[in-house]
Image (cartoon, rainbow, N blue to C red; front, side):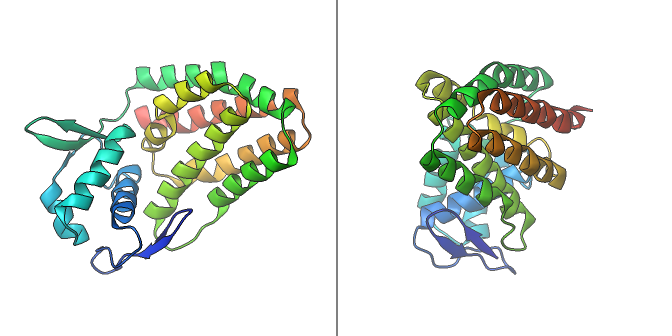
Length: 233
């Protein structure tokens, strides 16, 4: 199967899952582990053994450790001294509620600000990001899902950037909200319904309509919350 990001593409042998030659080995390893974490192939809280990944991906220890270090920085992997790595535990219902409360306080208002400051260049950036989520390249659902999660995070981060409030943007980015939320449920509904909601946000931006952008963002976050609540049943 082919794994693609914004800058390059690489091949993974479909039979063995081992990474073949590519332009950036560490990036390839990162993408492979990230996809497994997002699609719950590596379960929340599970131990991640470097030697096992070396055999599975057919690479040396160095790119594995570098990729795990990057994932640790994104809050998806935890490292304990003398014990090793494990996948971050799944967020609790309380944490889930807190994250969505935070998002509802910050993101709708930021979307309104972004709409007021919108121009053709910014709109094109957001449309490109949204388009990346809509593409269904390759046959591997795990890779498509992990790509959607990353593109979703980029899409929302760009909106915060265009709202011109660095503190709000940093606050939301520090929580790694999107990665933790998408690990709750590996299901097509999580992505497919979000696409329509993103289009409503983009339409408000295209019209430079702050009130519509605020409403569309609020509706999107509320629907996202409702889609994922069954994960706690």
